[in-house]
Image (cartoon, rainbow, N blue to C red; front, side, top):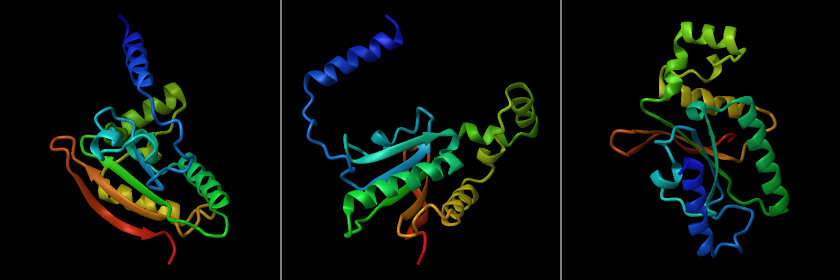
Length: 176
């Protein structure tokens, strides 16, 4: 049996008891979680998420890239349209993690090889210091004119060795 077949079997089991057809478009927790694509860092597991609780965005390192800025801007626009005149809370939780593969992207030799062989520039997502990376990412959001200042952003580091999430940046609106 292939891995795909295994996953499809799991989906058939999931669908056989499916009872979430009435979930609203807006997530119940009105939250977006940005985290790394690493299989050890599944926010549904580490945060106990249920179906419909949050929007999850995953990429290399859980970094705020231009694509993430655009996605957050689009989501916040959609939420504002759905909320109408009464703007509700909207939170972005950024979670990076220990032993991240994006730490390897800090190696200039690897950066050069990826750029030369694949045309891929990983320098913007390279991580040498998670706390610094989180602060840079929040600043990138704060300086993006398309991202509304009312979004509450926080930053955390997940430890893959013990399962704990540590707060680095307390929840606060991007603009006062």
